[in-house]
Image 1: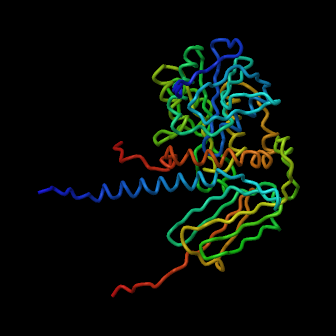
Image 2: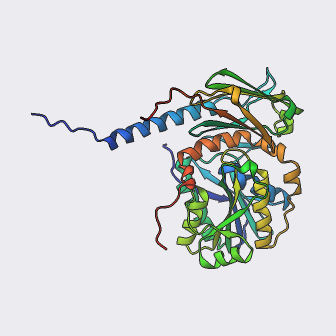
Image 3: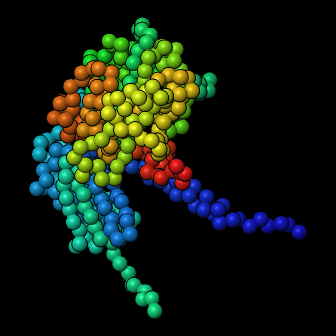
Length: 147
Length: 251
């Protein structure tokens, strides 16, 4: 008779964490293995960050040299937003110390996937020291009443 | 021929003994890298040594069309500054820091300073960035306190600064880490200016930081790609450990 060893909850958790780590590595590699600029649209992809708390999602983006008046935020889906902003000045590759590429950049553009759905109509936006901060309330489902 | 696992520091000119060594390697906010390159530029330090290894990706940096190692040491006036132009692959951090500290020990360096940051989630709301310190021995701790650097009495630090402090302690090399409050994943020239000003006071140098502040937006634009790659490595070394509260401590 073969002895079947049951996997403990810790084994399952470890496997789950390993899978998530492998996926994170893959996503990072996919993100970093393409240029952070696009000559055809003259856009730079800004650095972004997403923080999820129990009731809101906070998205930040680093937008140096952006014109604050030109910042636009729109929702593509309830878990995907687009951020665009024009720059106050054109940036050429030469300005970044690169002489062998040709092209200039006039705006920032990125799509930020959110891990949970949000209600964009309740968004609050701040632009502090060149950092854009968007606070989005999380979508709520049915609330269970405790009797 | 297979991959050589060695990491060597190759000197390209004579480097005197008894140096003060400043390390600025990629980490949160790229505080150390921005600070190190600014110091190199302002003090007109000359390239003196480079890191030679097969363990990094096959990358060179071209300068005037000629190949250079992306991890180099610049020296002048008794100060040597180590910095990198690529994100350091997380699995090479241990052997890299060991070779650096061995080199520092062979050069009989007087002191080592590691410049970097501590991530704070609300960094963009902070008006006055604080610089914290930690050291490899009591004397260096006293030096930090004498220069009004707030000591991290208890907590985790992760990354090059953690290993440099530990290996320097093992080899009895006086070392200190100067860590400014910073963004986790946005280049932070303002935090770099704060660590430079703290270093200015401690080792009595005079590196002007006004340009770093004035041209801060340009620096942030130029450092985007390095920050992106560094962020991927920070996740692998579990940098978020620095947010953790250490286990219960009975005072």
